[in-house]
Length: 295
Image 1 (cartoon, rainbow, N blue to C red):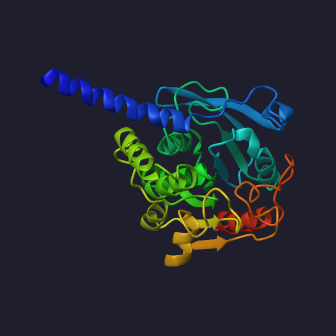
Image 2 (cartoon, rainbow, N blue to C red):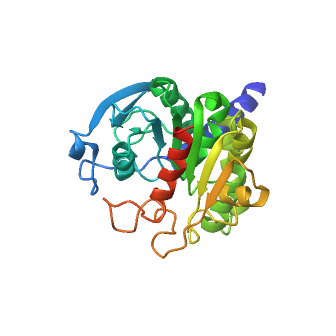
Image 3 (tube, rainbow, N blue to C red):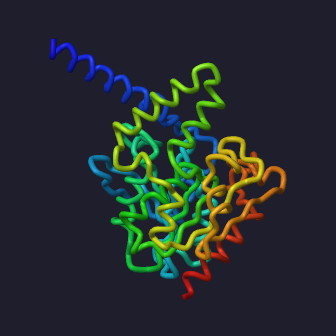
């Protein structure tokens, strides 16, 4: 009888893990990715790789010889690192060593991406590999914004500041918001199962709060969230909501409201403009970074 019980528990755990694999599985882009790719700027970046646990992750360094500071980008859930090439080039031209990398299972990387905490773990590995003693600044979008904040307990002393676009504060809040939007009939059950799955996989990280990590590490931060974000509510699960409510002298908040520049992806660049930067946002980010790098 005891073997039957253990067998049923093992099966339940396996099913919960598979739920996370299904929900967080990266969209597999092909070589026909209809946006600029790192290969399009082969003369501007240095291709390399590094290890994150057992996964070898691809990375590209723009402005490899720049000494002003090192920027490491953490990408969002729905796109590979190529999406942020315009930002990397922009900062490289401003004198920064700008590093883009793909998380486990993303783009052509092997491995299984089990959930958002894995992005933070991959970022921590990138920090260990690329930190060269120059001012280190982390930049993340969406899932990446959560990663740059929640990796601070491991890398906080090395990080000068973070820039978080369209981020969420913690997984439980985001899962609740996600299921209420997408599973109206069974939202409670799906939220419970998905939360249980993530807790099983990441027991030490599941309850981490981006805002609390920022405060406890005393890290300077710029938090950006579009006023019309359709994926993470600016007044709900957003990191921005916590930052505005609690406030901190170490934190700068900004919410663009210009149409087309104020959505979840629009804060990075205007809709249908794959090679353009968001002129409403990026100059402000550069100013924030420059002020820190100069001190």
